[in-house]
Length: 313
Image (spheres, rainbow, N blue to C red):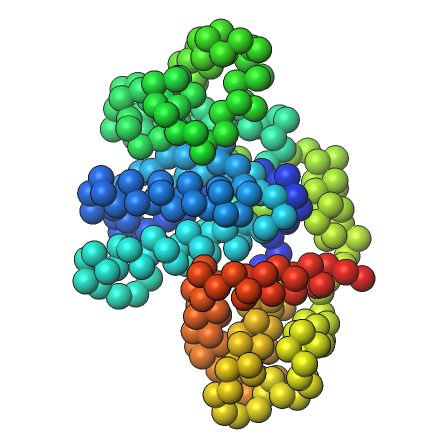
């Protein structure tokens, strides 16, 4: 069964879980943890997203993240590629570091964000690494307590739920977290309440689906992607399947493949048949495209423009 597309709209808040491949550790030392936090900070600044909470465990990561116009998939792809490159180069290895597809639950922030942040910060306590969350260095808990300086973590919104004055908000936040220490595993933060994609009541689900365009059954067709990319690169749709390694055609094909992969109701295998390429070569082309976009501002802007064009009726 095809996986349902992720729900994206500006302002969406997600619980993201990123795990090591086959349960392997993703950090060799504190230098690695610091590097991943640096990439998180860069993501917040580059993609205009807000990191509300994080917790780095030995073989997985928890994030509470709120996106802007850039979809979560783009943010996570960048984070995955950058950190994997760092880790593999340092260890002298190749291959995937993270387990396939990251897990992301869209949450109703008004109902669940406070509880989610507490849940994330208490993860090291639940697995008995520490007895209090203050003892754990690699989460954003101490930023909320005012004892760690992480200006890229968005703590103001959460603190405003507790009190207007910062000192009072910190005190009430600490009490709130302490009240949850006895709380165990919460399935809903891992599985969601609506087909595995979101956590909220029916009204929230309907609103989220409508904001993302899915509530009205709107689906981007492969024909629209092919037509738009062909227009942007001033080529014909048939050119995408031509043989040869001309850079313009290769980039256009990778751009179209990336857009197909971004829309999970579409099949990259089907697109490969259309352009006479196997899925492996298309995936490699997407990886090269995303890597170039990290330093090529013109290409990054083209990708944003194409994404915007896809959303137009």
